[in-house]
Length: 168
Image 1 (tube, rainbow, N blue to C red):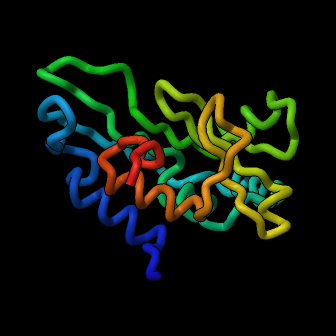
Image 2 (image 1 turned 90 degrees about the vertical axis):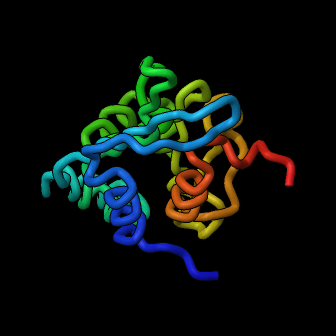
């Protein structure tokens, strides 16, 4: 199946959010929510090199080279902020800091999923070509059967909902 590239995903996000300048509305369970997306400058080269040394998947590094961190679905409901982005993809420096603090050196924290916790990339699994993207928070011992990029695409299409909890 055709997956989107990092470039496709960034273009799509920039298009729906007018480069992060405008909010866009999504009808979600319980009403219309206005979302904002925040982009950042590209990652500094020295940080990129450190991430490459950690053997992070190319697509993560490629995403950070377009935007060093990404806040997805910063939401407002009836004009009230709802507590930061639903999904915050860490900047390169944040990834390095979180990894330094993390006890399990197979797991590199790459994003924070609000109300759930962090999601990590298991670099040992990734090297062995096994499923490598952890479920968030308490379910971190489970792995998504897709790449980080495919997860991101599905997450955006699901308007920031935990699509993996839906019963198909």
